[in-house]
Amino acid sequence: MGEPKKSASLSDCGINDQTWNVVIPILYFLLFPAALLLNVVVAWICSLMKSNSSFMVYLKNLVTADLLMTLTLPIQAASMLPKASSGLQAFACRFSSVFFYTAMNMSTILMGLISLDRFLKIVMPGRRFPCQSLLFSKVLTVVVWMLLIGSTALPIIITTDQDPANKSNEFCMNMKSVLGVSWHDGAVKITEVIFWVVCILIVFCYVCITKKVLESYHKSRSSNSQKKSQTKARVFLILAIFFICYVPYHSVRIPYTKLQVKINPGCLKAKLRIVKNLTLWLSATNVCLDPLIYFFLCKALRQKFLESRIFKWFPPITGRNSEMTSGTSM
Image 1 (cartoon, one colour):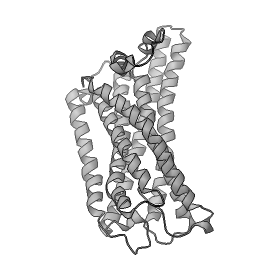
Image 2 (image 1 turned 45 degrees about the horizontal axis):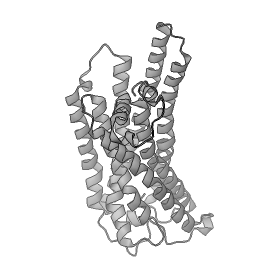
Image 3 (image 1 turned 60 degrees about the horizontal axis):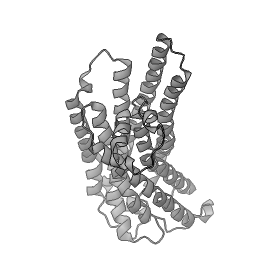
Image 4 (image 1 turned 120 degrees about the horizontal axis):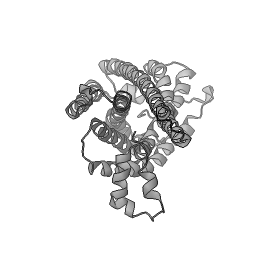
C-alpha cells in the first residue's frame, strides 16, 4: 500500500497497469464506508463498557487499531489512483501507509493475546496467571504500542524524507534514505516473524479450546449436538477469517520486499506487486470482519448493544433478545 503507479509500461509482462491502478483503489473506496460504520458503532459501544478484565482491555485496543486502519483507507486509495498528485503520494508513503501497517501489526498481536487469554480462562480455569491481571494487560498493550511505534513507525517516517524525482525505483522506496531502505527491510522481517508466531499461537489456542469445550459436553453427558456444532462453528469462523485475511498477504510480503529495492527485476516484481496489493486489500477487509466477530462471539458486547440507543433504531424482532444473549463469549 502507498506504492503509486510506475511510469514504465508493463505490457510486455502481460499486465495492464493502468487498469489495476484503478481497480485496487476502487476496492478500498468500497470497503471504507462499511468499515467506518461498523468500527464507529463498536468503538462507541466499547466506550460504554468498563475495562474490568484483560479480555476487555485487549478488545478495546483491537477496536482502536481497526479504527485507525479504517481511517487510512481513503488516503491510501486516493494516492494509488493514476492521476494522484506527487504530494498525496508522498504523504501516503510517509505517514498513512506507516499508520496502516502499524495498526495491522497491532491488530494481529492483539488477536494472539485474546486467543491466549481465552485459552487460559477456558482450558486452565483453576489457575490464575500473572498475565491475566488487569494491570498486566494494560501495561502490556501500552508497551506493545510503544514498541511498534518506536521501532517501525517513527524510524520509517523519519527516514522517508528523500526527493523521489528522477529515480527509476518505486516512488515510496525512492523517498527512503539508505538507512530507511535497510530499516524497512528489517521491519518487514521482524513483523513477519511476529505474524507467524501469532498464527501458530492462535491455531494452538483455539484447537485446545474446542477440545476442552467438547470434552465438557461429553462429561456432562450433553446430547445437544446444536451447541457442539455452534462451538465448532465459532472456532472455525475465527480461524477462517484470520487465515483468509492475513495468510495470503504475509506469504507474498517477504519475496516482494526483496524485489522492491531492485531497479530492473523483470516481470516477477510487477506480478508480485499486483498480488501483494490484492492480498493487502484482503487483509484490510479484516476491519469489517472483526466487528462481526466481536458481536457474535462476545456476549457482553451483544448485551451492551441490545441495551444501547442504537439498537432501538431497529424494528423489534420477536425472540431476538433471548437469541442474541444466549451465546458463549469469545
